[in-house]
Amino acid sequence: MRVLLVEDERALAEIISDVLREERFDVDVAYDGTEGLEMALTENYDVIVLDRLLPGLDGLEVCRRLRYEQIETPVLILSALGDMPQRVEGLDVGADDYLGKPFAFEELLARIRALARRASHAVLPDMLEVGAIRLDQQRRSVTLAGRPVELSQREFALLEYLMRNAGQVLTRDQILEHVWGYDADPAGNAVDLYVHYLRRKLGHGHCPAPIETVRGIGYRMDG
Ligand code: CA
Image (cartoon, rainbow, N blue to C red):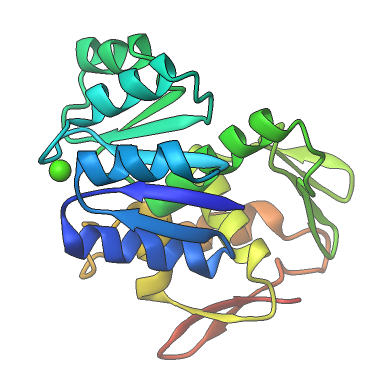
């Protein structure tokens, strides 16, 4: 899966592309609108992630020109200008999705996957399974031993991240960055609290939820 990322904030571009590469996307990065447009017109991408405020051409203009050139690659606009009228403006120039900054990587990834899926009409593996827990990414639903489990959006994102990395130790920082976003408060105990919620909802009978505490580091879901 090839992704073009157009983002002028270099530090952010680097973090986003690292996260995407971790998820096995092929990522090309452009640091201004002119370069981004050029790459989008000459290469084939599955998804384009476009910052809105860019030197050269701004994101809206890049998107408008792509559509004018009949490039139909799905475009997700990222922007600090995340209010409703601005989102509408973005969608009106032909973007497929609009995500306000700051955002959580897990949400960015979910949206990119959704766009890629719509574009390719391919059947991607949407079902994750660990023990008696099944998570359906497309329907956003979870069952435990066949019974539906109600999860909040944040709980769902956390569970999805743990399940996709089952068997691996994830540090609290990794979890925080993926599920809460790059500007989440690292001093808070959100991660521990939400793991506690998940354990409560996902244990059954005498079986505790398969989320292990790795002392001093973070958590691991049994793989
Ligand atoms: Ca920018």
